[in-house]
Length: 326
Ligand code: DP6
Image 1: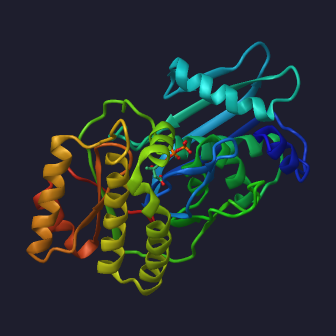
Image 2: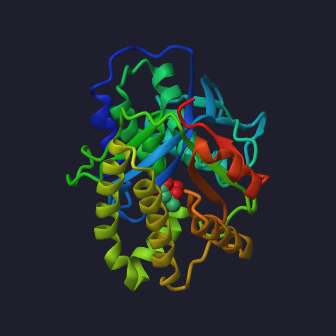
Image 3: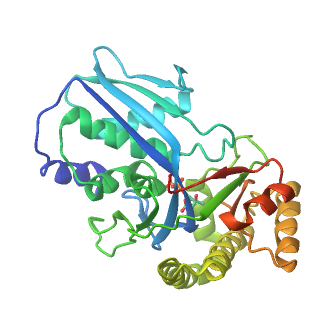
């Protein structure tokens, strides 16, 4: 099935009529059990289910209107870079009424780490804004199916707090949606440690495709991901922080191990990433309940509880602390 067919099928369920303006916000999210590998690239269907935590008020706000002559895309108040604008326009083609163009103004409020201002909150905010403009009246679950086509991880950015994206089994991808978990973990904190803002050479799509095709270690990934997903759900339900942190950190490192065993090899780490990891391990040896996760980039995201916040700040004075449930 082609993605246009998928979209057309979903749009048959749409209700209202288009307005003149749509606006929406979506939070960034950090995967604790990672999505790494597609079983269907056309429909963006993942090999494994994933689980994330959203970053509260940090994310993307998007306003969308119709435009007469061409798409006009703005990022943080300026005309968007070409590659960004093209990716959005190609995505908007899926929903474009005949003869019409869009004006999109999108802003990220993630102050630092460029590695965080990801496509996830961007595509989630865009589909929510589109829903507002077109009057579809879709549920978050339906919107997650559409956001998924823009970027897989965007499916999870439709929700606050914990979210899961079900891998699904159907070839048409209709069961590969995300949903929010009702669990609230008030004293959980995420700490962002920025190592570099430089744009990565190999994007996630290319990175995961290469890993899946060439890495012998990738064979063990689907089973580990399933196991980690189950453990994280148990740890969240029981608020078992050591189990939660250990599973998330191990899942991230296992994903990076599959990448390093790819060819050509893929390593998103910088020397400073490794020294920060070692600092976390040393702190843990000294009984601090501190863990980290990392995505396809050099930055670390720390996981800890509020009781340890002062100690974390002492160790990492530059850390940017986020309350995911605020
Ligand atoms: C390492 O969602 O950016 O952050 O679907 O190809 O756009 P595409 O990939 P993307 O990949 C995210 C990879 C990750 C893990 C995760 O967020 O689950």
